[in-house]
Structures are given as C-alpha cells and as structure tokens.
Length: 437
Image (cartoon, rainbow, N blue to C red; front, side, top):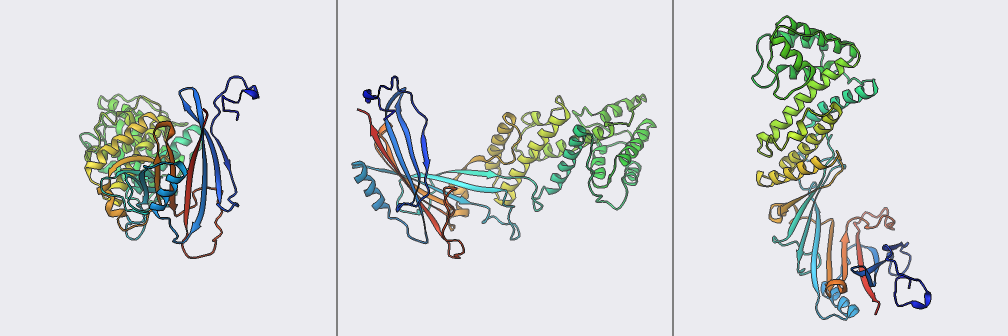
C-alpha cells in the first residue's frame, strides 16, 4: 500500500522506492516456508508494481518433482501459454580429483557451475554445449600440496616481516642438525669463487637460515661471517637483477674493494634476511610462471617491484604464492592444460593487481564444459535447479525448483539428525506480481 501511487487517500505524498523486504520464516507452516519477499517493480524511477516471492523447502530421500508438472503449474498460476526453461548444476571436483586417495583440506573448494538453456528433465546431466565456470577457493598451507615447502619458506618471511613491525621475531624450530653458523661456514667455503650469472648463490643462504637459525644472536653471527668474506674478497657473487637489498649494495661495493661499515644491531639483521628471502622467493615464482609460459615478466612487474616498502613486497609475494597454489592445483589435481591455465593466470593477475590479498576469495574461471565432463558425468550434483519463466521484461515471472545436498537456508534445521540415509533438500521459489494500474 505504501508503494502504490494510487492510494491517494493515505496522503503519503511523493512515493519513495523502498528497498527489497525479505521476511525470514520458521518453516512450521504446511508448505515449510522459510522466506517471504517483496521487491518493487520499477520502470526507471516509476514504481509499476510489486514482485512477491515465497521460498519453501523440505527434505526428501528420493521424492523429486516431474518437470512437465512444474511447467503446467507455472502456466496455470500465471495464465501463460509459453514457458522457457534454464538449467543449472553445481559439481564438487575435489572428490573426483584425489591424489593417492587424499584430497585437499576442507578449507579449499573447487566447484564447477554449469548453465544451459532448454531443460529436458529433472536432474538432467548438462549437455556439452553448456556454459561452465570453475569456482576455486583455495587457502594455501595444505601439507600435501606440491608447493608446501615454498609455503613454509613464505611463513618464515611473514614471521620476519611481523618481527620488523613488532620488534619481536618468532624463530622456528631447527630443522637442520647443524647450527646456522656451521652451515654458513660450509656454504661460504663452497662458494669462494664466482656465483651464477644471474642469481646470487647467497640467496641459498635464506634456505639454510630458514631451517637452522633459531636466535637473533645466531643471525648476527651468520651475517658477520658473510660480510667479512665479502670485505676480504673471498666471495664475489653476482647479484640478482633488480635486487635493491642492503646486501646487494654491499656486494656491489665489494667489487671495488670499498665496502661501507654496517652495524649489525637493532633490526638490521632481520631486515637483511627478509630482503634475501624476498629476492629468493620472487625468483622462484617468476621462474614458475615464465617457465610454464603462463605470464610474462612485464605482467609480473607489479608483484616483484622493489619500489615499495618491505611490508608491501611481502604482501605481493603472498599474492604470487596464492596464484601459484591455484595453478598447481589446476595442473596436478585437475590436470588442465596450458590452453586453460594461461587465461586463468591472467584473471588471477588482474584480480591481485587491483585488490588486496584475500586467500578466501573465490576465483571464477571460465572453462569448456567438455573439459570438465569427466569429473561430473558419473557424479551427483551438489546443487541442481531449473528456472521456469514466462513473460518478458518487467512482466517476466519465474518459478525455480532446486535440489541440493545441503540446506539452502542457514536457519533450516534438519529433522533427520542421526538418520544414515542421505537426504536431499527440495527448494521451490515462486513469484507473483501486483501491478499498479
């Protein structure tokens, strides 16, 4: 009544379009209604009427509707002679894509959403001409991941970065039987000549300190050994291109026999180790994406830039790792090829150039339904639904019938707790319209 411009006797003045109104119900009525909705029907700024919705849901074992009956019910309710149908199915891919009988942790989900026009029957398997989208929500850190070691190295960098902010560094448990100082001494003895052409062998120092350095004092002792060797000319490593770390500057100075004195006090040793680690990890990620021909150095410039502060560089490396985990999962778990991986990488790069780190973000990646058919052709969908529509434009009305393996509304309590037989949740959304003449 408030939205109806014809209700002049209410003396409402100018009608203001209200936001949609949805009422949560407890489902105790015979139809098991869980939502009632009302949304203004607009043409520009003018209110033409109201769309009214009812959402009902019930649990069944195998009692599914008949598509032709659903279409007839829609025709009778809306006095329509012609209806169109559109299908949707969602499949979970992780269960079918196991590695040695294990799957990724529950925090990570990979689903495929498939849509198509003209539904033939309830629970129809999507045809190959369907449109498909891969939905990947993948949190790094699964011990079974092929890049878990790289993740552990990243965690060490995060601890160093946090230490720079708080002044307190949490050192990891030692993973090497030898002390950090002994490992660095062996390392320096084995690299007393020139390093690699493009990447300093000192980057390997990060790995050694990651697994063996357990205190601030040890870190100082290790860097003291390195700086003394540089000053004496015992090592003359090449520098990783683009590195702007303090150690790189000292190495450059050592070429000319004029190294400035550096005080290994305060946060300087931690900062130096963080810089080395960032250089090393950036190299690892760049080598993967370029080596697999998934990205160019130019497209990765944003993630490996040294023109921002160390904390921002750490965030960029975290983004690179998240993208790496996604691409590795798509390669190893799902066995997708370069033709799919390349455009997906570009989508991830674009997202992370424009948005902050979000390891819970669901990446939506377009995929040919033919490429994922092997995962779903013999599987049951997590969600399957059909939309039955009639009318056009603002007068279009829709009936939705959906079956899912989980309750579609959070406030729906299943009465089948303890029953081992699998239950399916049937949801029906009906729409009706009130037009203001």
